[in-house]
Length: 325
Image (cartoon, rainbow, N blue to C red; front, side, top):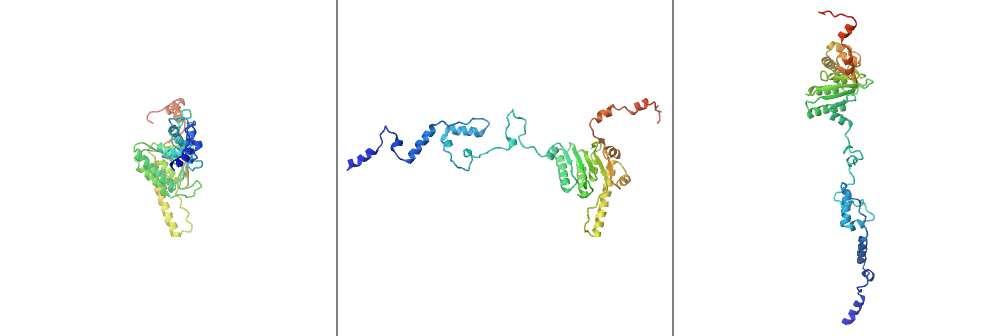
């Protein structure tokens, strides 16, 4: 009985000279043989760049565990080879990608800030819109920030604004918007340089004149204009409410006259007289009226240095200067 049972078993055993993959039909064993054959194949090693962590990691895995790269799923939602990393990262932001020396090595590593932020970094506050609540809020915040950053360095305010009105005269903001910026300027410990680069109308002209003494400038072709405050559209407002608004406009006008007279050196009567109608001033007239201290234009210092003094002009014209006059 024992011998009869041993014979079939012995005949079914494979010989040592034959391949086990041919005699046996086991599916697991065939898979193992296939993996061994693939492992013996030459595995392409990606180029190693010390500065590239992705390629370095990929080359390390290919050298130590090649089956990890060979047995990849055909259809997968994960991009290839990213499962090798604990925290995969496809690519940094474009400005953070490291550039080679041959491709502009001075390129910024992060996106540049917006233009107002760049100007603020240079301690410049630019008023380029009518004085509406959003503008006055931003300007006051920038002034407070610059004083907090350095209470000793000067602040430069560039003005190109039509004040609380548009260029066609329509009211877009309350007079208190201009007074808010003015009060913020007066509370600062910093020296304030004001520069008119386009138009300074109404409340914007007050801000231009409110700069530190000797530090109020104007471009050659800029315009300044002072005018009386305007009453916003009343619509279907009752007559009593219209009267209240009119009284408030007169109060704002008197305040504007008083402040302009203080900063320009003129009397309140003079300012009130010229403000009865819109009073436009070019750079020369604005300097004469006391709104600014100096006109900015390229080459002015050289030209003024070449001008002969009045005594030489009198001498050349044959005018004799008499003592006592």
